[in-house]
Image (tube, rainbow over the protein chains, first blue to last red):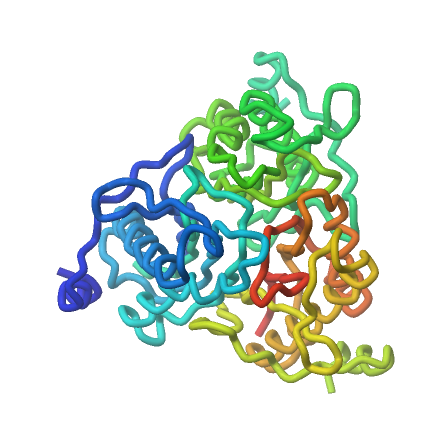
Length: 154
Length: 154
Length: 154
């Protein structure tokens, strides 16, 4: 088991099955040492989509939790692509897209749910560039969608 | 004629003239083996902007058609940059941005209009990572804007 | 002093201090010859956030000014990462995200505030690919957020 997955286990977390794409695309494409990961969306523990708009239906804490679930989905897709999560040399970039009411002003506090977990798992290699912004709507009305670029070795 | 353009012809399609940028930017920048393509927007066959909001003014089928037109514009820009569309080794990533009402939940079904055509034209090399999301508004009020990253050789 | 900073000075401009990230992320990550820069937001000369929605609270000229301020913040972050702004071999790509009312149709005219300055400073090396789109909302309700990819040497 990779060190990163071991750390997840110690935190009481585990990788979900890699999510099935909801359209004609694939979860990840590697080019050179970069892996471009498709945007992922969160599900609740009961398997239903984690839907709702920030600033209207959901609290920042709920959005944070949704972003944390997105992180696990990104890592599941990344493992499927590269085989071993310890091959990550750097998390390069996130685009965190929050389903938000036009008056909601805290997309960064939501997307931290993903960023915090990446830094907990990877330490300095997990520190990434990022944009965290508010979208009009997302697939299935989910709370957050996050895409990622990772640098890998081997 | 490239194999990809030949395939387009067999499908009854052809590349439009590369669209003129609507601002101080260029259609594509190549760095190493990656080409980063600017977001493109669709026009209707009569040359007017393909405008309207999904979930309000346009059906999913109309949005799908708009995304397909975006795909042709992306390929026109890509050909202008690399000279020959057969030099593409992989379509890496799309960001599909749909002009959407806050209650619209099907951005992926719209962006499939671009993804389906890429896969028809390039086969496995056309299978890409993607995010498909709902924006508050787009330039000129168009239905869809799509940007792309392609890996090329030579 | 680098040629680019000298040019800024001649224009009566200067680099601000690199902005403090408003979340758990870092301003830039370099991978190979590419630097991925986090989205930045603008402040007014008095230090308060440059807030407001295009098409509702702010004119296109005000949005243009906000985008120009974003450009200076991006360059401040880039200098912090690479040490010398003359090491830039090409500005590759911008994603310009405008806080916009659903009826606003001119995101490109706003994002030109950043693009124009890049081209003034870098000439042909500053000509970049770009998407300029309208978001539902942004961090702190600011007018514009812009992220950038730059190609660098050395």
